[in-house]
Amino acid sequence: QVQLVESGGGLVQPGGSLRLSCAASGGTLDLYAVAWFRQAPGKRGEGVSCVSGSDGSTYYAESVKGRFTISRDNATDTVYLQMNSLKPEDTAVYYCAAPRLVYSACAAQGYEYWGQGTQVTVSS
Image 1: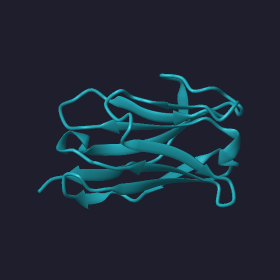
Image 2: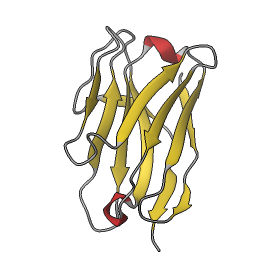
Image 3: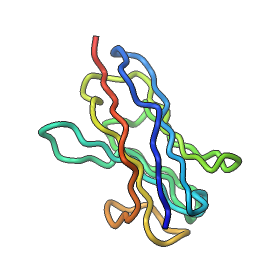
């Protein structure tokens, strides 16, 4: 059973940066596709970014392209989401997620393992 834990959220001014971390226990995260989703109050959940477990390909939502970067650190078994040029509309709870099977490609759904979420608030 893989357990995911996010960290790194907080309050930041527009234009600022944050780096979110997703760490795992009970499994080796570098074997899995890892995706970041976000959920804002009153809005539909959104897939933000993903790194493939099969070939390392990365994907980004149009709303964050050019501003967010997903990466892996296999030495620490952590996946990061570097968020730059943050906007108020980026305010949400951010979750990392992984599918049940290792070596999976990124997908829009079908994630079995989820973290508890970390709040990101972009406000002046």
